[in-house]
Image: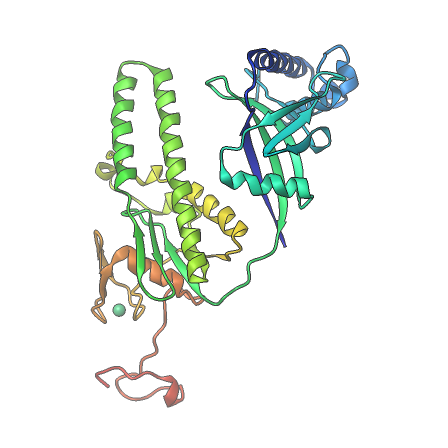
Length: 380
Ligand SMILES: [Zn+2]
């Protein structure tokens, strides 16, 4: 058993202006309280409890969390806005008809029930699991978007049975020329191409340059956020498809261990200036996280294998090959393939070695191994 956790971001359904204004007022009050705490010396901060803030109209459960959140952030000098948050004991989930609602009391002694809208179909099983007692609720956070919409961010955790190994693997190569290549256990390699991703990178880089030259820093930040959201969306789609493919093949996922890829892979400066090609921007880590948590929920096993030599060695004979752009060539067995397809197959067939090992009989016929364990090469 392993624990899967998720944060459900659910907008409040038909929240009227008076309630939104009330939330905004209470958040401002919360921020002011947090800034008061920040102004205190460290030894005083540690002794604070909700009793120190009885004069504030926010309930003690919320104030306790504010104290904890503030003390946890050691580098902040002042908060611009600190969302209200409290732990699992201070909110309850209900379901009336098809509508979910959450009840909590921010102000002392006043508890209200507010309906929530479920936009994503994936969120519903989690809410049902909370109601049935299969999932354990965590904290609740009241969060306001830049557009002024209020959300309840509910953190939930659930025990998920471990994936059973099937003995079959889907080799995933996250390349630079294409973001994903998946070698299926049956043989064929699937590609997810990055044309759109590259196009987005280039278009946004150009816009960013223009804005930066004009000195519009706020517009640049806004643009970066927008781009980030698109990339996150693409990563969500990619990871969902990969996990779906693994389920259909009845296989586990094998990924390369990419820790330290930035320092290892070098690129020419001229290539780096092209935003579509620059590897430093590729969102590999996020993609990996998405794949991992989606696989956990779908009961698909995930294994990480060392990345060394996966793209350099030949999938058929293990010899070091040459790579030119997309093409991989083996000097020994003359295997010719797409470089990422070759890498994906190497990852799929990983056996604890950097590359598959083929034993060869020496040309003079002298060897230590029994004859049946030695595969003879064509020439001997
Ligand atoms: Zn070869």
